[in-house]
Length: 119
Image (spheres, rainbow, N blue to C red):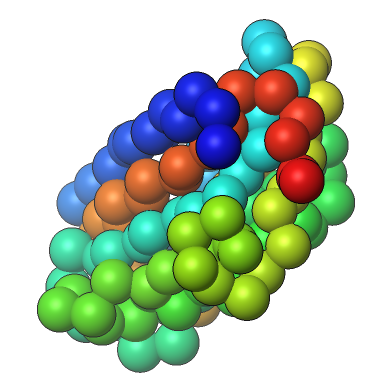
């Protein structure tokens, strides 16, 4: 399968409502996203997370509404049904929180292969 990395972060704080484009980062190497796990700090009915590549939604509506049921997106590499997502070096990756309540924190873990490896 190649070299897999995990990119993990938690976003959100008291007094802040997450929304569109709540976090950005730039990739220095090409990546192939093969899995994502999202989890809110509390139950947050209707909360979903999108991942954007240079402004275009490439993984959308990952369910993040239940504290005790992490939302997942899995490619065929991890036994799921989704097609892996190739991200070019230099791309700007951004994140949207849809229908987030105030004060909700969201943990996100992205599993990716280093390089363009959709096969």
